[in-house]
Amino acid sequence: MNTAEDEVALFLEPRDLIVISAFRADDKMRRGIKALAYLLLETGNPLVVLPEDHPGSRRLKMVVSAADRVRLSCDITPGTHPDHHLLCSAPALSGMEIVSVDGGVELLNAPPGIRVWREVLDW
Image (tube, rainbow, N blue to C red; front, side, top):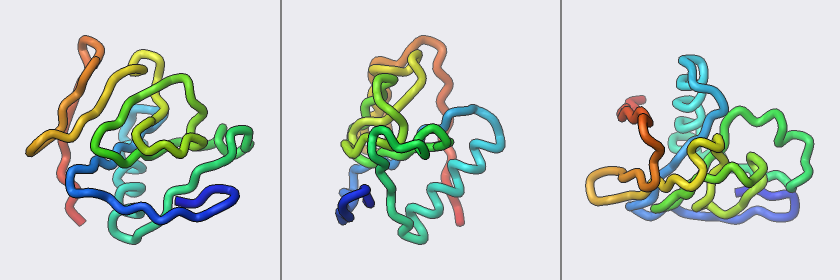
């Protein structure tokens, strides 16, 4: 992970999830999520955390969190929060948690009507 002041080496644990939040829901963004996952998992591309008032944060299309439990919040600025258990979201998803469980993922505090799909990335 790279910040404006430092570089921090973090390693995933077997139960950790990599959660990518995108600010649109369309086929183009789904392909972007797969591309970002590839960059992170296959090429070892580092995560970048911007300072809170950085002008680049307004242009981010996707952000990433990696932990065994990820909480969604609409009260943070995308790309500026170094806590890996917290990820920015739309207000409707704020407070939801994505939790690693044996053999899968559990959603806590999910709003009614949320759609979930699983896709195995094969590259």
